[in-house]
Length: 420
Length: 137
Ligand SMILES: Cc1ncc(COP(=O)(O)O)c(C=O)c1O
Image 1 (cartoon, rainbow over the protein chains, first blue to last red):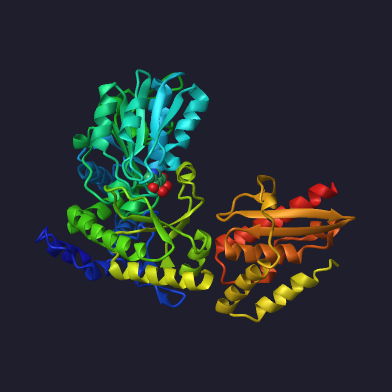
Image 2 (cartoon, rainbow over the protein chains, first blue to last red):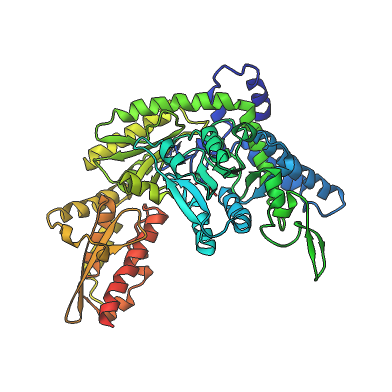
């Protein structure tokens, strides 16, 4: 079983893992699509789930399920334990100083919206400035625009280079006395760029601004230590971390979370309710109104345990090896250009072909059983900056291997023959 | 009944093809289109249909009570689909256009196409109806 296998995998932390063995942990990878073996290269959109996660969720439903933080009976305490254990797992995964700094949300989008709706609404006023970057996902643009409409704040956009790196000089030039927040991606979902977040934090803190990092992509490819990075908020999403959909988390510094008003009102988030006055529950429950995603939180914790069992560094090394191979193999296809060539990048290859539209490419390679993402990747401003409508994006998860890249390359060659 | 001769011809042709050849057929439609190119001057925001991954332009003309459509997409497969739609539903009266429904898209039975593309086809039909009916009003 996978549990045993992952134990034996931790013995030598430096040896690469056997990707074929790892693949057997993911039931979906043996599916056939149009009669062909599935080649799944879209983990940046959502990752596939190992059997341990699927089984753990099923098990919780079958044997330990009840609502949390409510009943005094065995099942409810059991479910509450699982849920709070999941919080500890996420806290440890991000190296948070306190477990109660982890707020469970539905996804990364909600984590960012929570900050905009509570911290932003309370502490920002007209004329205050937020700095984002050109390569943000819509999830880290639109919440701030909504806040702008409501409060009259100003959004400044830090430019990137053609390679996809943040222009640090230009970024620093945007920081000023009115900058209250820097909200920026740790890693780009389109270009794969990893931003120099420690430098960003240092510059922002030097002028007294807070920093929110959108870690939806980064956390899947590298170890994240929020205390070492020094940021103030960090958003992650469970389904990209090999966990279920419907669960994400916001990490926030204790003193900031304490000062923020609740996000939504309801059960779980209160201390004492009367019709005259209600007092808030302590962290993190203040931000978790209503019945949370109990089973999903447990599934996420099991997924993180699974990743740690394999070793985050080993995963990163494996993915980087496949990424290097992808750059070589795909880069050699005539008429195909790779967009996003920052030296510091992970696991994402965005491509433009001069022989076919991204939409046509997707259609043809789909029939070869290859799953990649095409389109604007929820980053329309970035596409405008790059002067393209759509790219074809292959993204690499811990279970991908060189053969997957070969299959993609062959499928792309076929596209060239059909349309070229 | 509406004059859907061209549409019925597509339905008939498509029904005889399997997944692989159906795809070739749609691409062929796009290729034929190359001989009768859609002028760049018509690729304007005014004629653009939004909501598709590929760009789609559809131009509407009315002669008497008859409606004519021409369209184009920057993606070849979508271009084939646009051609199918504009050819199918050109030459109809306002009343006939009003009667078109998603059942027509279903009838094309583009089985091998993904849901997203089926949705795209429905959106195209809606757009064609909007263009035709707006002029008639
Ligand atoms: C960089 C980045 N931020 C935010 C998100 C939003 O994640 P979710 O859709 O899970 O909320 C994504 C996922 O697409 C992403 O790639």
